[in-house]
Length: 256
Image 1: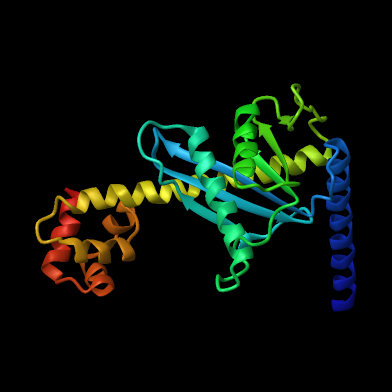
Image 2 (image 1 turned 60 degrees about the vertical axis):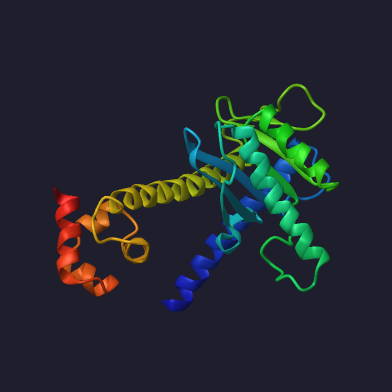
């Protein structure tokens, strides 16, 4: 029975691998890529009116997510929200770090030193031009880059005014959408966590007796208002080491 199960699962895995490879081959042909897109990196930005803006980098290799290679970026750009400038910052930091890792053997390898065969940016022609501009600024040549616009799932490529439109159910487009959606999920998840942390930090500032060290301890142990509010004073004391009466004051403040 174990051998039969293993054989069945092996056949399933082989079929999935063939489908993923076929989708990548179809993608390479449809976009006239210069190389097989074994490694695809996708980038997205998430923010609320420019606050707690985050960027995501997700990596797919051979059509499958490689989650250990995912990276998050806390956008440093301040001032008026500008999605183009935020995307430029994230791409610049990713590839500048990669170039630094490649050129300096003392820097730890592996995080950014491996470059993609295809760079996928969430957005249309404007976002694509941002990506092209960053690569040109850093003197990176030969890297394929495309933009995937959500509205009509149009694919924008360099040196072409009209987008490429693939059949909605084509394996290659379904793969691109899956990668783009994963980048969006990863970005918005980090954004929500930062927003929750900021909300908790602001609330703790209102409580007498909670200084910077105690606030940091509370945020480490309970990264959101909901988690802290649902805890008991004993839980708070045990997790952070703050006095029980102060823990009770914190809980009372959150529930008041």
